[in-house]
Image (cartoon, rainbow, N blue to C red; front, side):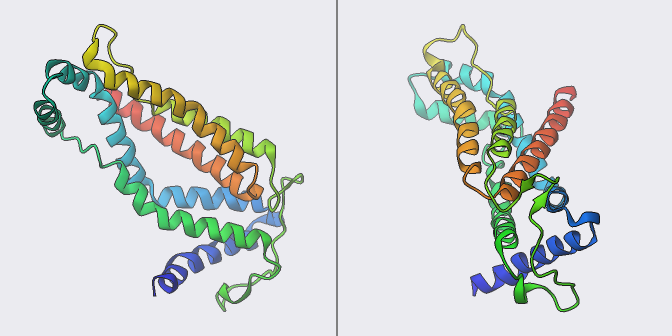
Length: 241
């Protein structure tokens, strides 16, 4: 039942939007289709992503105060946790709010992944195309005259990794104040994990992107750039406030 609903509510509509864009774009450039589909998806989830980014920014800004709380109650974990939750409450911050939008988006992202995977390699798009829609049968995978979107491409994988690096760097939690010693151990550990993540995530992006069809890597690149841009705009607005 769930599989059927997923197919009818998410997979099939996204596939048909994908084919519609392919049909109307001059030259049927699949790369342009992927760019447009990325913009449409990001526009649809914009409110959710904005909420997630704002929550991450709010938690990030509170890190120095959290470090002070951990220094003050370094020998009492219970008071430390209560003071931290009170700090979140006073600043109207939900530390878990950034996770929910990502979970809500997950089914859409899975459907989009399946659509591009199937659309790029299928010899015939088949029965999932609506009756009133023109079915081109097989999509032309060549984009920008040089990239085959159905095959892996290391150049796009490296570009996606670079975009991931700068986007991850912009989201890192701030370093704790240097004058805080034992109470900042957790923050120092977090900073160390953040530094590892800064290099680990881009490396994984390049590794995985180099094994995926270039169309999926191109979507990953476009999506990361749009997320980064949205993040920069929100951070600027938050800093002004």
